Image (cartoon, rainbow, N blue to C red; front, top):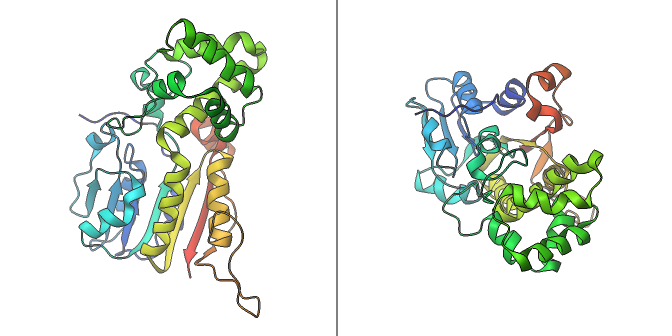
Length: 300
């Protein structure tokens, strides 16, 4: 059974940036509903090959019937290991769309959205042991403050963490509605939706270790790309985009690129073009596109 997903963001531009060899080998590391993968396959020749990654069991129901396509049921943090298992040592391009799929947000059972009541879950990999329930109900006050500040840039993180602990002393926080009710009295009405979204984002990033996964992925992407191969990344918040931008510019996530005696920098990639954002028409048609940022890099 195919599950409905919303339209992929920056579809035409991302695939146009990605494909440099029509009969090359490509990877879509965030398969989701398969929108980007379908477009890539349309752009490839008969000898082309596309590997796609997705750890979400729901996404795996959308696999494509095409001899040039292979869906790998795994997290893209293990990119090199799984491609090696399939006999792939290098590729011509890699596409990553780091956003949580609309399907996941719209499925109340997954607990990603502030709009629906559901169990506190937020796991992209539904076999993972850590869920939003464990984060909210077992993390210390200082741990909660740290993730709210770092991953959600939440103002008033101390107040929210303290309120969570107060509620936990009376009873567990089981659902998204329970968590919303803890936060509502602490935030003026006009800021409530924004703060709720920031809190849920912070917890989701912690549950799925999203930033660490992106770091692991970017380091492996450089290793597996051919010289001249393209990396195309679509990000949805500043934390993701900052990682991509810095890695392309410096080749590291902290500090600066190494230099030789003459000041020549040792960086593995170069950026192609500038930052790309959706136009107003796409933003109107697809609400997910509002915060999207696309960056393209090429292996040197």
